[in-house]
Length: 150
Image (cartoon, rainbow, N blue to C red; front, side, top):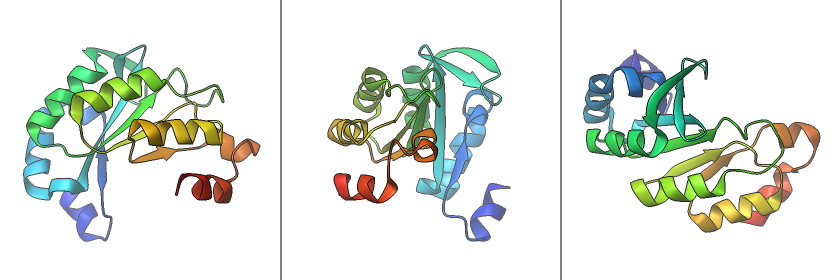
């Protein structure tokens, strides 16, 4: 399926639950498709959530990330579920901890609600950010955000 998606013109495939349940699939995908594979790490209070955030795994986000790096993963998305959609603020300490552990490109999500948050994430070293709710509410203007971080 991954090969079919990539051949159709999609540049990257994101794996989430598969990272926890089928590490061999991740290893094989990384071997065959390299940087086209991204692992999505979704965490609630530091522990991995799977199956659309419905199940809690008994593994910490940073431990899963390290295991994925050993399998060949070169890029990650991190979502702090407790912050997602809240218009509060990102879990900056968790993002910083994950960045320090993997030292690879990371896209942060969850709780981003201001240009200040984007600037802090950039300063921490994230590759990108996923902004959702704040765009819908108008708390973040996309053009202003892009200008502020470029």
